[in-house]
Amino acid sequence: MKLKTSIILCSIIAATSAPAIANPVWDLYTGVSIGVGGQTVFTDDKDKTDPAQSVGAMFGIDLPAFRVEAEYNYLSESDSHTNLAMLNAYFKMPSTVIKPYIGLGGGVAFNGKTEKNNVRTNWETTAAYQGMLGVTLGVPALPFKFDIEARAVYIPDFVENPNAKPDLLQYDARAKIRYLF
Image 1 (cartoon, one colour):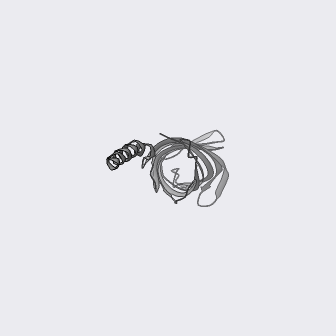
Image 2 (cartoon, rainbow, N blue to C red):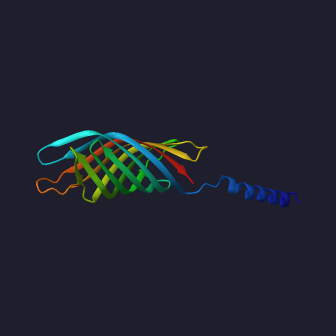
């Protein structure tokens, strides 16, 4: 009788405690980012570098070894502005609270323009690429994750010009906050 009671008691404890320790394998998240850095325009005969900034929003899925997200960014410099729509993949290094990662992204730059000396030049809609390197700080008791990252965005041939086809490189340090659902 004691064995039967012990088995029933252990079964009840195991059945009621199992859901409390279960963790989901993946998390959906949304977040925002802000960055500061520089923007260099490369042309055939000269390069121009100016300070630049970026703001963005993202939505994605966070898995144990990697995460995938869709991201919107607004890049601005004193004379030029553009929008980016990107799809990113991040590969995370195993760690506890601070998790290093590396990421790659591809997408499109659209609705860009340059305004200088009252002359406005519209940009071509073109492909855009980015690489990221950073760390994620996760606070175990909160549904937030904080990312600090370095990023480089490359936009080739962004202005159709018969004399030159300039390329754009924007590099910045970004801070992100992500809310996990």
